[in-house]
Length: 422
Image 1 (spheres, rainbow, N blue to C red):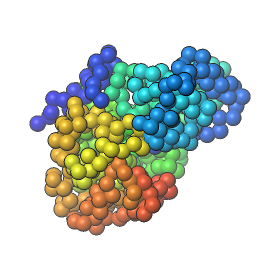
Image 2: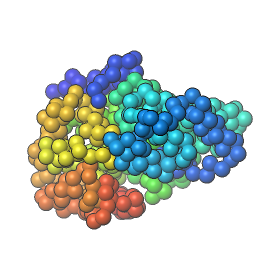
Image 3: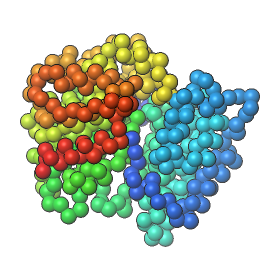
Image 4: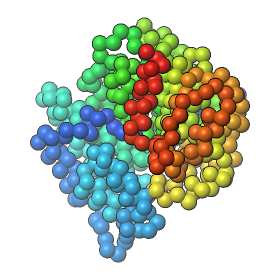
């Protein structure tokens, strides 16, 4: 029976946007690389100046995120991560030094101020017909709006930032090559939203559903690796994430089944050669759907996702002590799982276990499982238990790797999918 709170996810998001709060991987390569044009450089400088002019200023009396011991470890990690993905180093450091805490409104405002001049510049370039530079400006703006909503949209300010993240992404996507199609699929009184791209020159290519994780939404997920491997990509938010109409509950796999139903109607795809790749907290769906849709899915990648142990109280209490995530990772799980408290999460999370549901001994599509042995957010035991029963699986463990193992794992995933779907 459909749970009321699960069915009403889209109306819930609308209430958040209206002001009713709740308890509380990488952008397109084209957008984050080669921002060398002078006009875009000036927009980046304008964004930095706008932040410095209107944002909070560092104070020697009030420690910022980089110096306050409550936040320092996670702040250093996140600042480095954001800069590696394309954030302006000076502006990013200024934000992390000036914000005294992780309150949602100041966080969203600070990063949105970096996005706004880039969004305006994108409109100017688009009006001038300079579409390649407009793409870069819009996508960079979307990137900053994505940080503004990070890690999850559990506050009106972050919901508003995510709306801008979508808007600017779609403005850039008009000029993507190969083209991107925004697909909407009617679903249980709401709709599924996905971004479909086909590799240029391919005739009825195989298709891969890309999804997950808990804090990376579809606008931030680069699917060019799938396209470069000769496969089409259907990029969508996982349950409890972005625009997905369902929450992260045991029966939410029907969301992906509906996507498969739709893809099989497309004459330009060979959806009988269908794969799925789930990353991080969304890796759960990469693994689970290999069982749920064992006859229609031909290859599945479970990359850094939970299956059993991560959902248990012992692991959740350990994660509660983590400082690297910066926010509490459990707050992101509380949002995605649509519960109201840590105590409720301790009760609900174990119901997600593939072991408890009895999936491990059932037939499964070919699975590749990958993660780092030193992952502090998702237990490596979730990978090992996946291998212990049922059909044989492929696996790669990175002994010194943390969450998701190693950046090179992406190439391994593409080789696996291409080999199974070719």
